[in-house]
Length: 72
Image 1 (spheres, rainbow, N blue to C red):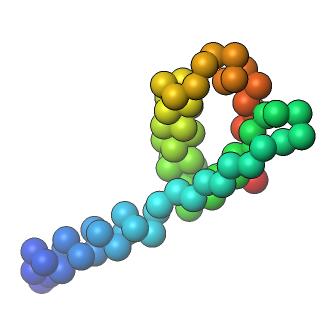
Image 2 (image 1 turned 90 degrees about the vertical axis):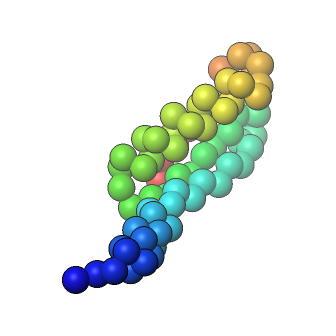
């Protein structure tokens, strides 16, 4: 039987392994290309929603209209 510390360590490792990586680069026309890498589509979806909400909070709507997101 696993101890509580072992369970916590296993949980921490699984969360660390599922982190989403995203790189953002500007396209020639001013739009942004976001490359998102993850092990699960659920994580991609949650990160995508976070990115959009952060973009809305940080940038004007006109800039957001120029943003395009492509999944690789």
